Amino acid sequence: MIPYLQLYEYFCQAPLVRAGLHAEVSPHIQTVEWSKYVMIAGRIALSGLTRLATAQFLNDPDGALLMARVMQELGHLTARLGIPLEDSGPIPIKTLCSGSLAEAVEHVRQFGAVMAARAPAHKVSTLQDLERGRRLEVEETLGYAVQKGVELDVPLPTVDTCYRLLAGVNRYLQSKEQEQREGRV
Image (cartoon, rainbow, N blue to C red):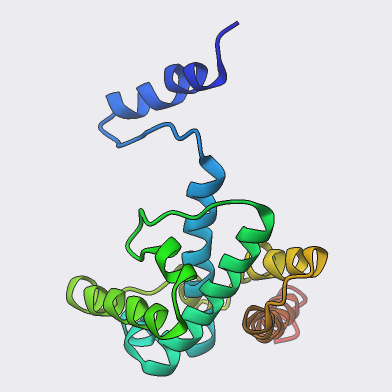
């Protein structure tokens, strides 16, 4: 029997590499995915609530503080799940989640400076969806974390607040979409 990783390498990784795309197999996929999720969830929350370009909310002292809180809370959730985080992305997630809040804010602001230099107009897809009046993926992202936090008795006050605010925005967008389908607008 061929081990799973060998099957993946043969059927998935090799064709991607031949096509010129970077692909690698990770025996620690939960670590990789949760490390990305922690960063993405923070950006989803702040972009949707501030309606600012990424560099703007990352560089703002209050925006950076809230993003750091969201990410650290999610770090507590991953710890309860027994999933280690890593420092492989543009923000050192493991370091950010294990350090002080002040250190976490500094990491977020450093990433904001990089974004301001490299992609000052970048907007997270959540903000793009919001600007176009499209449904937000708030249940699948922040809602999932809130649900897991309740299940595992991990307090996520900042994540919960962001989730509830964005869920309200999402319900409004969905009601407008329904009105348009029914011709009431």
